[in-house]
Figure 1 (cartoon, helix red, strand yellow):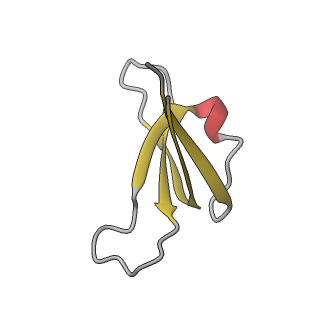
Figure 2: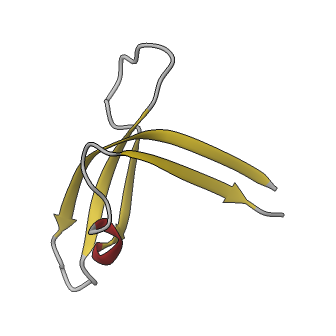
Length: 70
């Protein structure tokens, strides 16, 4: 099993138009860096159900855990 934990800051939360699908939100997250970055400031963009997005706040610290099982 591999587990990667990433810390950063929530930079933006936006509702994605319905378009016949259940309403989702796009959450843009900027990871903590030990060095300066020269590329787009958003490191991760995730699409989540609006119910989960309502629990998040822009500007707050977050942790994302990625897991892969055999």
